[in-house]
Amino acid sequence: MNFESLSPVAVGLLLITSLTILTSRDWRVIIGALGLQFLGVFVLVAVAWPANLAVVKLVAGWIASSVLGITYVSVGIVGDEKKIWPTERLFRLFAAFIILLAVMSITPRVADWVPNLGGYQVAGGLLLVGMGILHHALTENPFHALLSLISVLSGFEILYAAVETSSLVAGLLAVVNLGIALAGSYLLVSPGLEETS
Image 1 (cartoon, rainbow, N blue to C red):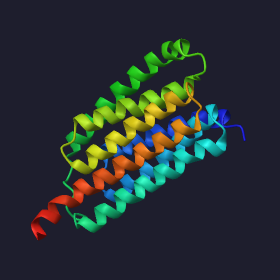
Image 2 (cartoon, one colour):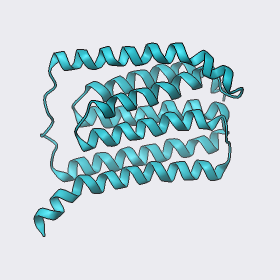
Image 3 (cartoon, rainbow, N blue to C red):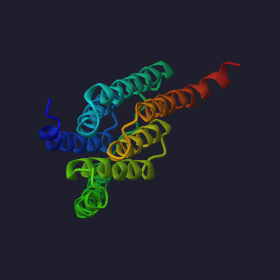
């Protein structure tokens, strides 16, 4: 399958899902967007890697998403989402637009620096890194901080896929993704464990 022809669709999917994660407060929408985000990461990584190696990213990402979703439900904070003001949503969209402009201006130069990287891979990777850093800067919720870390790591994985095609590196990055999800789920559950003991 020619994944290079799907690269523009994958970058568009990454933009939509990262904006959804940044502006939404419904945990179901956020977990669904994170799962779709890993589908876009899979397509952009599959441009540089064989599909059977790139599918490791997809499976590890979906497992991490489901771990966070199950933890969020089991902790019992399902109805505890903070309301987001319309002005806050506008500010987040404006900040995301600035990140998008920065990514569009930096992409051709970074694509020239690394010969194996295509323009869409650079745009997708930098978009996820920038949106993840922005999301981390604007949140105080541990759940959203975990989402931002996973987004930054996914962007790094897209950029690093063109440099290194080792199956060991793919496995290690999948373990890091799962480790962040498991450590985050423990941090979400740990306040409840202290109260029961």
